[in-house]
Image (cartoon, rainbow, N blue to C red; front, side, top):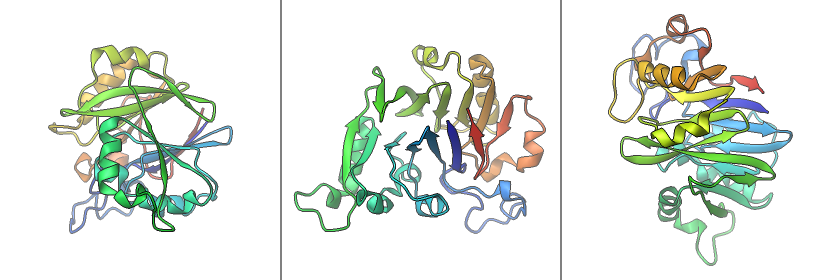
Length: 252
């Protein structure tokens, strides 16, 4: 499995518009973050997790080929705002979206032109798959285990593929979901900033979950400029915890 981080930023990205802080004006490419998304390639099966407003920019450098499935974590715009750009993939075949019912309903409301009886030529056309948190499913033979977490009160889906887990926009993980994290090699989890936030994990809350899950490696994502400079913060982390950055690729 090859995992490529297409984006590792929070909803405003880094740099934030109009901000002159040391992070937003940093010359280090690792401090520049598009909205959070990853692309998985499992023996040629390509699965995208989240499709935010930066999707077009993120996917242009990649070799063009069909996406076998798009896993959506939740309905917030920074995670689904690029779905219209999947129109070109519709020309290659069905575009399969996997998400919980809340997210699928939100997409139908926001993109009614994709679900009309006679859609306008060229719009993205989706095949929708509702994910039940209690049931694993497969995409082109790749087994997926959904993990339900809470983003304040909003249910959000994380996903486990083999021994890789991707969790974003987490504030709390229900105790009964931890069994799905056992034996994980790589855990990706959000850490917005050092200070506490109502609906996102802080750095220290994320580190506590990482310690509890005990993966071989963990990568932090969905990061805001309030976290601080990439190189400086990473020096403070445990040896097996790294800050993900846009363009990072890891292999399992």
